[in-house]
Image (cartoon, rainbow, N blue to C red):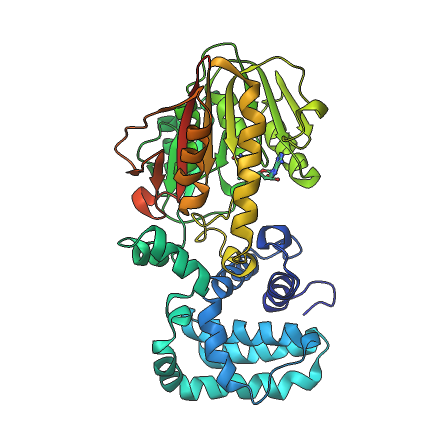
Length: 438
Ligand SMILES: C[S@@+](CC[C@H](N)C(=O)[O-])C[C@H]1O[C@@H](n2cnc3c(N)ncnc32)[C@H](O)[C@@H]1O
């Protein structure tokens, strides 16, 4: 092992320690560029996503194997043990090889003292596996691999579907692309993928979506650097057609980064002026990078700004269309971001709902009479979705709902909900509002 290049398990330990013990998001920490071998990069991804997906179960299995809890400063050793258990339960690596490689990480992270401990715990698990698995059968959080508050919320909001949602959340998400129709048609790109030996099918209910049978590194995709395609879930691709932008409209994308929907709007429509905002500087940079790669910077004004303070970015001209893809719990995209289960706390929900209300209240006056606002979340929680929109409709006489009647998703008292896994889609909520004279 080179001293400068960590091996896959060491890197996975470092990344997961940042997420599990320091509260960072996986997408902010998961950088495998230091690994030259694609198999190592794939293993880091598998370990990071897999451990976070099954974390409550792995933690329940680990607890009885430790004679005493590890000290706070040894969070990396706890993570390493979880990685060790994950490999034995979910990967087809021969256990002795997985254990030996995992034990070696103790030296790489300069905790030689833990070598014996990690070896003993993982070998004990190998011996007692069936007993331990039987013992956690009555532990709901372990069985469903979700924290209790999310299970309770899902049961309240989706009494007959909650179990299917939980199972979908624990699945691997499909790998879906959006074809840039300004560069290439979906049929042409499907042919390109076939020529490259990649199995792919059109994504239902979208005209530019393609779902691959297996995920691949984007650089292997034909035309990625030239801006022919982007990675985007099929449910997210529905937003642009729902917003239905007339030619030469003024459009606001109020919570735009990293720019998936902004770019899709610009690919699909001729837009006179699109204002794209996001309040987080690092994400605004990603939005700019997205637009540059896709050659979509023309007619787009990108601001790093708080949408709830229009005096800092708005020129006073009303918008014909507003896309409001609000910050939310992410409860519909847990299968894609399993760290949500660990990072989100029960109190976050009320904070999110208040933030969404503030965004709706502030941006509604910026919409022209006759204009449309599309409210979007990647959540399945009623408070962020139809309850939020119903409250808004009852307090704004100039706001009216445009019914969304489609073959996908579920009609709600207001708006439409896609549940995770349905039609291969992520969980999304859409509501479309129309403004009249009050
Ligand atoms: C669901 S994400 C947007 C995803 C994006 N529309 C896309 O399709 O790629 C929500 C975004 O809202 C941003 N955000 C949160 N509060 C905001 C505010 N007050 N003003 C502007 N952006 C905000 C977050 O930084 C985050 O990037």
